[in-house]
Length: 494
Image: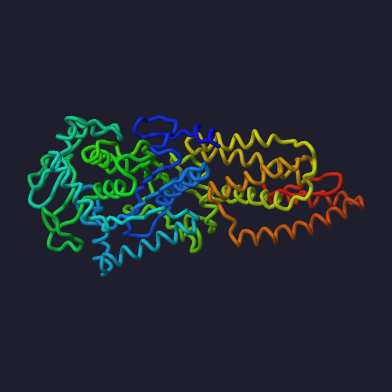
């Protein structure tokens, strides 16, 4: 296993290339992922991000690392336009729904937890909240001011990007040039407290109507969005840790600002590997709560959507997401989900066949299981390439179908390795699971088709080949292929 670990490569957004993974502390991994802002129901775009990092968490654990996975809850400070203008998203929701802000937080945090549980995502090691770390944030803001990079105006505190850029590189992550940012930014209108438009808030003085506010050395107010994650990641993972992750939409300005803050406070980029999951699109456009171009998980799982022909199980939707690399844009469509459902069912059917296989006493195998296992690890070691892993799994599915049809053989040793590896990668690493409904449906389908095959075998014995062929052709039209051998017949679902 040690050689497998050494071969792991991760795409680092800072360098723009895949790098051999080396942890700060041997056999331990510290990973921080920006969690949800809990002002509305989690949508599938959010779920794709958290599914991507769940796979990374699972695979690192599978390799034998002890992983401390920190995923925060943003419950204050995330303003409407992701920068320093507009209303706090949670406060706005509280006002619209006539609730206390913490009622909004509780309501949508519960929804988030219920949804990721349905998706079979593992809980993080620590799930801190921004409001639970106000003192930590104030401490860091004081440090940034002391270093001459932060400045206070009228009770608000801002990070001086120009001063920082004199000795650092603001743009190291997003590859944006500060001069280009200046050129593309409108000048200040005289009503802003900022020295420069590119500066970002560390602390905002609260307006009288603002609901969520705390005492600070500068004013009664609330923290900026970016300082929250710097405070929480540092508290639980230290000045330098292994992986910082999030959606690609957070690369700028959020993660760029985090790196700047960390450099001032700790002299590091916070993490050695910055990892970003790409977008899930709908109708070719970014899936977003604010633009209402999104589809809620329950619309797919249970209530239905006018965009889809039917509902789909949680494992099917998760499998759909894993068929694309986490750094690739993935577009949601009815046809893609239907294809994923067929593919997922094929894998589960093959695993069930393998579990019920009785004859594996051959001394040799018609399938190089050790080479296949290496291919699975090679895929995941190549920046967690789940599409290649899934392609390898389908190769095993074909072989399992051949074994059941009597046209291939497997040794006991290879049978055990194949069974264990299939279970490890399908259930432990990818986190897919058999739903009760799926298992029950498959059992009934097995029973019905076994009856049909028995009647067809009787027709073959009686040399009624016309009826035998008719049954085979009718099943083929429904996507069920019959595999005949000298002794019996089996089937696979296309």
